[in-house]
Image (cartoon, rainbow, N blue to C red; front, side, top):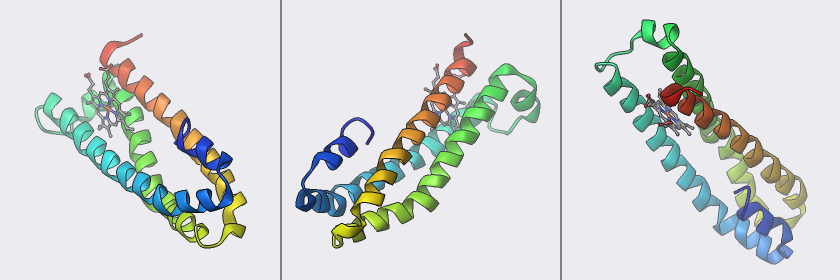
Length: 136
Ligand code: HEM
């Protein structure tokens, strides 16, 4: 989104832009939904498998590993919830914008900002998870 799709969208002519908003964005949002669900299930499964299939508050709050997983996991959870509940509205706006070019500019601005913020949060999550697994 940040490096390929949105830059292409902002340079596209209105007709192409409308086509992209209607045809490319819904697919990317759906892909993101699947990837987020897989990350939640994978992360939770990995956590449980490493803690004898139970939530261990002592290890979660009392160790560097636990706190880092907690911070990264919570941010990952919030990012996913943002996608499902807030970005979902953005997707609908994107599809509507395909039929109404007047909506485009504000929408394109949001499409430029939101994925960048998301990428920033993702980098923090990855850093936090790596800190859990390896330390500095
Ligand atoms: C945006 C979401 C997430 C991203 C990008 C992410 C990324 C990562 C990465 C890159 C690692 C490997 C770290 C390394 O080997 O250096 C990792 C490990 C791990 N993640 Fe996540 N993760 C996410 C969400 C979650 C969630 C929701 C949980 C659930 C609690 C979770 C639990 C774990 C666990 C238990 C490990 C293993 C740590 C270890 O090997 O000691 N992750 N994650």
